[in-house]
Length: 121
Image (cartoon, rainbow, N blue to C red):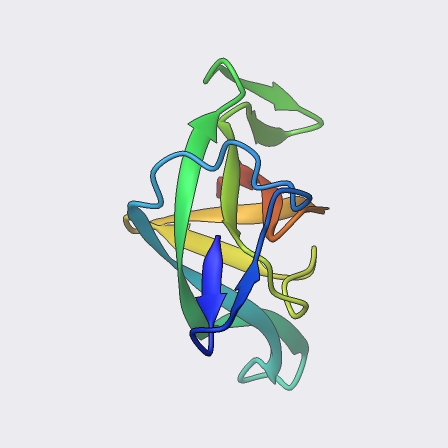
């Protein structure tokens, strides 16, 4: 319940708060910035956009394997944070100096769930 102007009371019983966990992780959200190499070829890089407080839950088993000469990581996590309209799948997040690709963004009430996978070289 929230009291507004000492006269009106607003109830939030119909808003789904969900299980958000502890929002104890400060992560950096990064956006794509296209640059050029010294030879003039286009290069995809990422730059910091904003910070956000999130909770994190591991959903992968942590195993890694090679597929088509590429290291595939099963380090997948589900982050939850306050709802923002500017978060999408083209972005990356950095948590404790580890970079993750955003695979999906799902709105859940007043929050968003972000499915991520660890970026491997």
